Length: 330
Image (cartoon, rainbow, N blue to C red; front, side, top):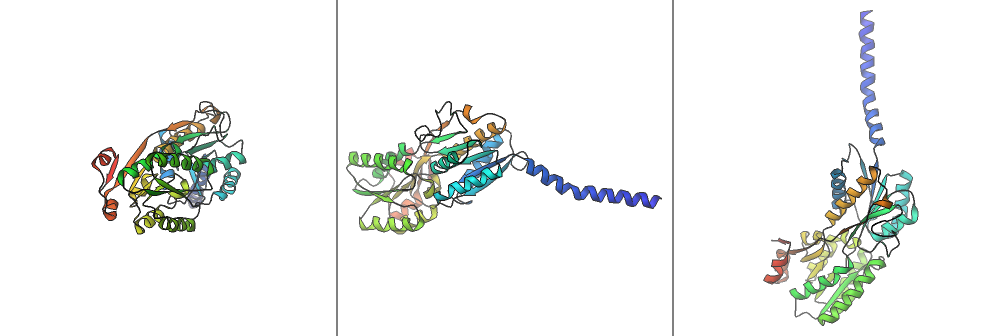
């Protein structure tokens, strides 16, 4: 009888032990899911995931414990956004975080019920994503960053660095017209004021980026301004390598390019913006409605200069320009 009791106890213990993984999996599945739709790949969008994770943590949501983050990337192909959004909607994610204007537009066109938190460099009111910044009014809210507004400043900074260069170029992505039309118009206006000849080049694929640099050589462009676009952010290494190969002084729109060996960047601190998006996502998980969450505006910009890249190009950075830099990579 005693042996029977011990064996029974052992069976109960084994059964309980084997049930623990099932319980853990059930608890994991029960966690709210934040879907992150990025424009690039898991590697190029890693900073978005990390910043979103930190923002969620700021309001009490810890990944793996109280929330799950699922990532999908468009790999630079904006036509994939509708299918990726539809997949998240089928998954019944609690919040959908998007990282570009085309992604936010695809999300709005797909669902009116899933809360959407966007991060974009455009006016969401003009794009009809929200009714107003203070009272979005639908299932979308998010964070706006400075985009087209600071495009002319990039041209001015590059001109300050290479003042004798009269022919420059601007590279934009034609598949993101809501942003690039503004960038192109404002850059052309700035070029006229500075007395520069500005060629507008277009690329939306890796091969078109190669073609754009071939055109840049043909027109003898002495400098290049990269238009702000998430597709270009997913092609950091290619763009930096081509600029280095052709010895073209280039100014980029995010710090990632300068860190990767690019000459100079001037643009929004996107990590800070995505952290704000994470906070908004957490507030929605706590029960607040996107319609009542004001759209946040991230206005911090940073100038980063890579002295190693300047040396390779044979450039001396003016002292006044160095003094204005938020970060200098030596």
